[in-house]
Image (cartoon, rainbow, N blue to C red; front, top):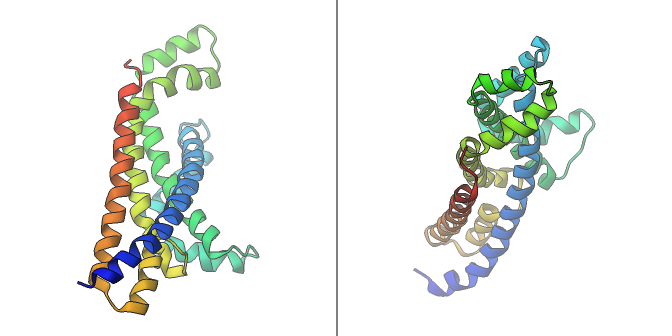
Amino acid sequence: MDWEIIRSSIPLLGVGLLATVQICSLAMLLGTLLGFALGVGSLSHSPALRGAIRAYVDFIRGTPLLIQIFLVYFALPVLGLKLSEYWAGVLALSLNAAGFICEIVRGGLNSIEKGQVEAAKSIGMRQRQILVDILLPQSWRAILPPITNELITLVKGSALLSVISVYELTRAGQAIIAVHFVPLEIFILIALYYYALVSVIAWLSRQLERRLPSW
């Protein structure tokens, strides 16, 4: 192994890691907001809305993330919306995460005993009050672990953004390899960076889960 190249590559990959954290943070924020909206909407009384959400979720779950990235990157300009590689990547990851988070939220809300909803309706609570005051507080403990898994999947999936030239951790490694021709050493470093990032996310999730109230 060329230790000098490895030493000089560590800060360069660190820049790529920061870009990955930024991209994944934005994508997870947008994906979570959209996923929660879709998850709540999937419980709507409107068959048309439920059907549209189901079709979206089925498409996201039934197609590879790489194809979704290509669709966002190449299809949106045809529709008149030109995004940079960076924002196309963020959008693709957000839409992907939303499809999975929708199912997580739907499952978490459905896990609450139906009798509580019936009791809330009987005392005149509105649907929004039931959602905010009864369903969401009790479903957080069931929702958090799978959302953490989705965030971890998102972080690992962000490596695919390198195919549309988004500068993130994997793309930074590819640039180093193109100059120094040391793929083994660099990919080992990249794997360690991803492992460290995923370990931090898992640790933070466990800490947060311990602080959630038990119902």
